[in-house]
Image (cartoon, rainbow, N blue to C red; front, side, top):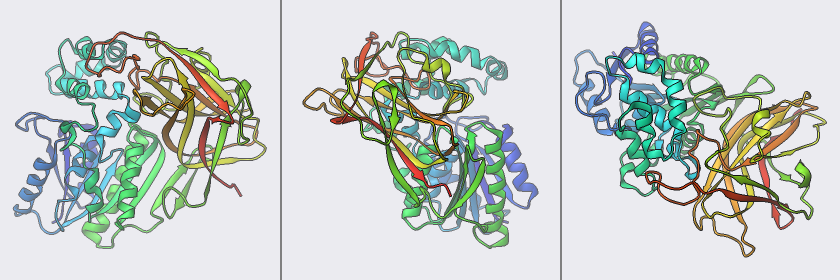
Length: 492
């Protein structure tokens, strides 16, 4: 009988892995559920993301068992998905299909998105890994949220784990100490270069507000460019949404049965299926990003304006970013609710807003979103955070997508007039703005604690540093045309 491998660091009685595995087994699939090294009875020590050797050894062991006959497949979400990417390229020709949800082959890019540090995610995950096997682990996790909120306000970053748990958490300390892109620590923890060699059919499921979305879409592109069989589903979900879990499990059943039992290959339907928020409808597409969009630049203007018209001569807008009172995160991909009323955030003096006129007709933005912000700063080390919002007819501003870019030293270099252009990669989206609604762009220098505050010193994440305010100027004139870059699709 064919076998589906599920490897998890969260225990073989964990809700998601247990339910998904049971549903697969009840539908005629043989499932092997295995604890990763150093977790829940598996010997050794957990070394996050270093799953390649153990995963390949497990596949070789399965092949020698009398109860396994025929093909192999793998399924996993989040960390479980990373464990699948670790071995998918070298698993062998009998690996028929892989289903990965809310995950990516490159955990490093998520840990340091935009060159910053994903503080809330890193500290929260390290805490769960540290307490989940303790006798009182469940009691620890019951009080996880309030304890985490307090610890996330700690400075310097290197003592936040002690504030949270009362002792050092090695995984968290490792991520602080090994943030350099060329650090050998990540050599056997990032698997992106191997994705294009994956010969098995791949099914990807994710959400518009998932923390791994940008990386997962890069995995899709690598597979598609290499001519591999890959299907993609993107829904209106966060990382922990039950809807995402349900859809991923349903797709796993469909795909794995098709390959392992029925022998029919990928189930029928377009290779890409996305949910368009605002329109509240699912769309089938032949590829991602769709080919029928047109890139539009919506420029920042004086007096808080936003439009496709080129900017006119104007003075820059200014604000002060104070890392001792960091601009807070409100919604967006993370551990909480994704879409919220942004009124409290937009009322802060360290957040600039630029708003369009009411739309005369619907506007669909479907694809990668980015921004180019021309900045003048009193610090060479600073951050630029950009957010796209939908302002409804009542004036309520709700976030759609966002992104952050860290500027370090002379990267990017300054122009002759001292300004620097920050190219901000934002979360992709599929969103319809309704007639009468307005587009709004926020510009600030932080989203704490989703991203660690920038102290303005350029010192390492693991080092103690004083907190230096940054006086920021955002330019929007013909020589410095700051803009958000939108993939716009005509609505018929």
